[in-house]
Image (cartoon, rainbow, N blue to C red; front, top):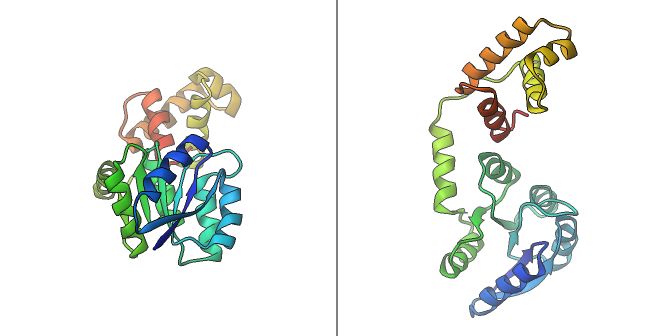
Length: 205
């Protein structure tokens, strides 16, 4: 019998997942938690075989909870179950030690199969998530931004013009443009909006 803990801040989602899991004779829901902080506490008491962890919750997010749970119980198997599939979210979860990453539109059969696979020690990924990871790994390693380039791009993200950025950093507007051109080249983009979006996706801002 695989014992599962469900972690999600929405009671309706937890109820739906419990119904899906309890219908399988090889799985039992050992408990629930409504936040990352609560999940850490509940894990100590329940010691579930597999935990289904939402990613973004008030009261402690999923990645933080994964890190803390695994620090105290390295054998824990935690599958992220979320609506978010940005590169940054996926990488943060995997780096924290998640055993899998599924989206909430996953079918019941796939969810049950993923729980069983995680319990066996396997890694489980939604097809779209696996594709994003492979694409990211195959992409050439991006150059990192310098501290000044990061500073300039952060001000762009705040909506400042080149002239305003120059006044803020005590540099000329031409120098601001030079920094931005270098940023565009490193990120492989051609405009300010794309630069900010790409930097956010890559966790550079």
